Structures are given as structure tokens and as C-alpha cells.
Image (cartoon, rainbow, N blue to C red; front, top):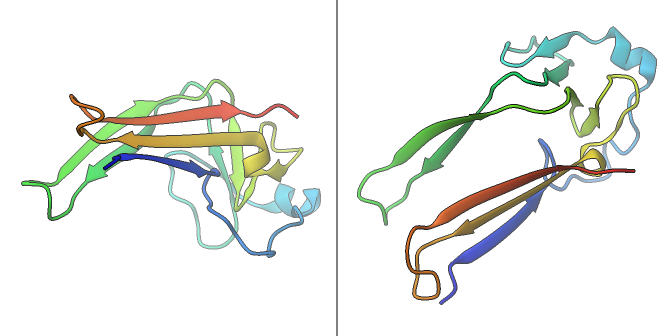
Length: 132
């Protein structure tokens, strides 16, 4: 039995239907409030900024009936460049927008201890800036 799983995901979104295939206009985006992580967003539309160099928290959780106790841990990482997000859209300068999965690649793999992989398990996330 193989306990290795690999997940590919886009930033902030998994597969979506045809809705949102066209980026909002520059005028519409410029009129939206900008919220900088870790501030809480207002009601309604907004642009979410993940600033370069600032720690961004990532909560790790493991739970389920197989475990004797649930696990929660917080890790922090920081980005090399600012990243602006609006729904399924991303930008590095809040001016030129593209689908988030065209700008950022996320690969998550989980390896559980097993016969094939004795020793500690591993959760490995790779985040890459995609080049045009």
C-alpha cells in the first residue's frame, strides 16, 4: 500500500467553472480597498496584499480517528516579492493581473510513514513563481 499523495493547487482557488475567466477592469480594481495581510478584509470586494518580507502564517492541522490526539502547529514564511490577490486573479504590482495559477505554482506532497517509506513522514509544499 502506497501512502504518498501529491496535490497540485492554484493560489486561493481550486478548479472553478467558467465564471471569472475575464479579469476585472483596471478601473474596477483601482477602486477596490486594499487589505494588507494580516488585516481583516471589509465586507464586499477587495484586493488582498501579501507583502514581501513580512511573516505569513501557515496553520498545519492533522486530525482524524486514526490519531491518538489532534495536532495543530503554526509556521511562518515570507515572500520575496509583494503578491496582490483578487478572487482567482494575482498580480505582482497591482496593475497587471493574470489568473493566479498562471503566476504562482503550488505543489503539495504528503508522505506518510509506511513500509515503502520507513521513518518520519513529510509534508512538503513548493511555491514557485511562474515566468511568462
